[in-house]
Amino acid sequence: MTRIQTSTTCAIAGGGPAGIMLGLLLARAGVDVTVLEKHADFLRDFRGDTVHPSTLQLLRELDLLDDLDALPHRDVRQIGIGTADRRFLRVSLADIPGPHKRIALIPQWDFLTMLTGSAARYPGFRLLMSSEVHGLVEEDGSVRGVRYRDADGEHELRAVLTVAADGRRSTLREAAGLAPLDLGAPMDVLWLRMPRVATDPEGLAGRVGGGGFTAAIDRGDYWQIAYLVPKGSYREIRERGIERLQASITGLLPFLADRITALDGWDKVAFLEVGMDRLPRWSVPGMLCVGDAAHTMSPVGGVGINLAVQDAVAAANLLADPLYRAQSDPDRFTRTLNPALVDRVQRRRELPTRGVQLIQRVIQRQVIARALGGDPAPPRAVTALTSSRAWGATLGRVLMYGITPEHVRTPAR
Image 1: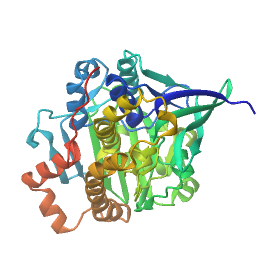
Image 2: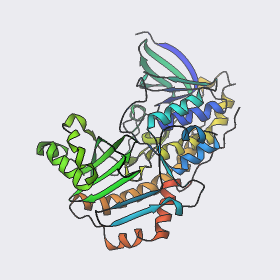
Image 3: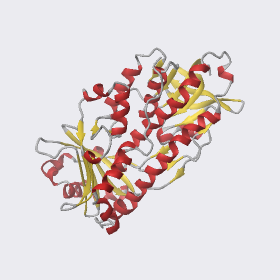
Image 4: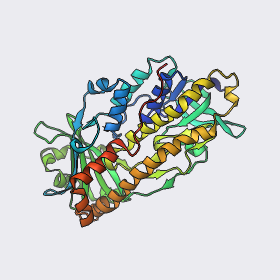
């Protein structure tokens, strides 16, 4: 089979938050970068859409915050988990140090479209849609690029550095022989939509009770609902019938009772298998993993896209200048970018990743697993901590900004 051969300085597999943000920052710094996305567009439902203060700050540093605010979105200023009559976890963003006191709820496809529009202003940025990466180009023990296919056939894209930002089931991670450590999760998630009316609550509505746990995300004219179920129970829940699911949801979110019949079949329910893992090693010579490819996060706290963006900023800060200099090397496609330098990305980002995953595991074990087992109240020690305003501010600071927040250090060339 004939392969069409091309080249770039940095090849990024995956057009999610990590891949697009990294592509934007590298192109802004004068690096030739190609982002490959296997889908034809970004319009895939039930993806994370909680843009945290850490990401809002980065957008401000890139002069893109006004662009985001111009898009339809909802701002959330408090996060809480509770039963019908009591909250046992509450975080007020007003108590969190930092300039941004909100979470912006914005569909991820709008967020990514905004970022790609900004990146497209730089001549070194190239985005290939409907381009499925399926393998690595390897020579002399190093990764030299990727193999992908599109409507025109098979292609080989050579690169100084290849970045795997292709998600929790990363094709490139597997091709490089990198295996994640499974950290486990007690739940899976059923995603669905329900109509929203003007008299409904706004923002995030979370509720625990009756062996169930749900969160409703305000998308303006509809609710995106995450209904948590015990790990491995999806088949059994389906066998009980859609009416049982309707009753469970309205028991937790009674304001939906007048329209719950809109959920009239399982074709309106999407199943998400929840996992949490991280790679012991994020890179091999010539290739780096970031975002979900390096660490799959639990949905707890909605931190996934924000940690992925932080990875991208750290990678750009550390690697943009070496990649820019490599462009003048005529032998760049036969030389390997210093692996010790690439490894610094993991050293920079591993502590915040481990720290947030630890918090997620505690909440999963002490709150979610107990709720799904029929006990809506967490242990008293947890309740005592979470009811403290100071503790809530500390937890909120970690989840909203991260343990080591990144800032844009790359030049604009």
